[in-house]
Amino acid sequence: DNHWSYEEPERWGEHYPACLGNKQSPINIETEKTIFSPELQPIQLSGYSLPASKKFKLKNNGHTVVLDLPESMAITGGYAQQYRAKQLHLHWGSPTTAGSEHTINRKRFAAELHVVHYNTKYENFKVALGYPDGLAVLGVFLEVGPRENPYYEEIIKHLHEIQGEDEEVMVPGFNITGLLPDSLHLYYRYNGSLTTPPCFQSVMWTVFNQTVMLSHDQISVLVTSLQYDHGKPLQNNFRPTQALHKRWVLASFE
Ligand code: BO1
Ligand code: ZN
Image: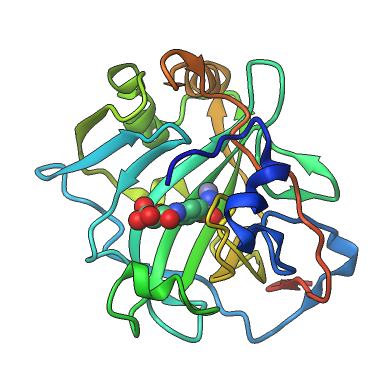
């Protein structure tokens, strides 16, 4: 189930028909066309401070770097239902190109963090994948800034240990909230999909308006450390933006 790559995303539909659907992700968010919704409450999180005394699996799966998260982490506000954390991962570009998945008014950011959760009303992640309200993914844009980001460093400092596809390392817990922007009030919301095969249309997306800064060196290490398929650089692991079709993007702010 791993015979897809970012070399030809337009061909994913041949093996994964859901990738041809009309509620696909990522999208370009045209801010002037979003709809203010006062119902969108601040995102509230619980259990996001992971104990440094415990270790969590960080893996190069050939498509991204994934940190497995404990079920004790959850979204408790900002959605109509409760969602349990599953994993987080990143999408990025190359040393010379930006690599976020979502874009804002066609602007692409350096990289994008996804924190993946599933609805607690379903038995497990696999079951949740089958429902339009099954998953909640929090998307955060990363940009180059003046300082090293100590929270992202907890991931980045281990990338040299998992350079090859399927390599993994156990890393100590840290405060995952530190990976998110300061304001969890300001965000966009729309219904979409997994941005990789199988592209199931089971994601209620939150894309935060505020960005998070990493140093130039941190972004460099992120985009140059990993490989897939016996030595190809794992770069530009973002899907092109998909048509909005009959969807609206809501905004929590005006
Ligand atoms: S994303 O957040 O839309 N980029 C995204 C894309 C694909 C997955 C998750 C999030 N894939 C799923 C796999 C499952 C796996 C699960 C958790 O991630 O389809 O097999 O168990 O790691
Ligand atoms: Zn993702």
